[in-house]
View 1 (cartoon, helix red, strand yellow):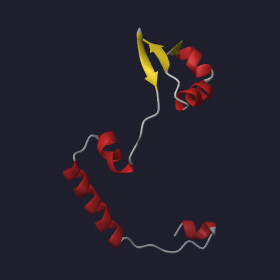
View 2 (view 1 turned 180 degrees about the vertical axis):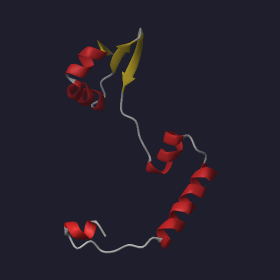
View 3 (view 1 turned 30 degrees about the horizontal axis):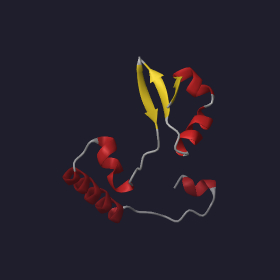
View 4 (view 1 turned 90 degrees about the vertical axis):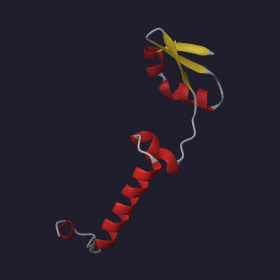
Length: 87
């Protein structure tokens, strides 16, 4: 594993990210501990659940509320002019 300080990593972050994406083990030392730099899979279906810490029931309620609001929203087609942005 290649280890470097946060300062070293910051100076050439793009290169380190590319190397990590290519399978190389990269570790960044912070506070006496090593943090691994490696790719992870993010699924859009569970993003809100993980990011905001809600359960599936709360997420389903929020989704239903948004869908309901969308059905009642009044919209107008934008004609490309600045005036139409102001309503």
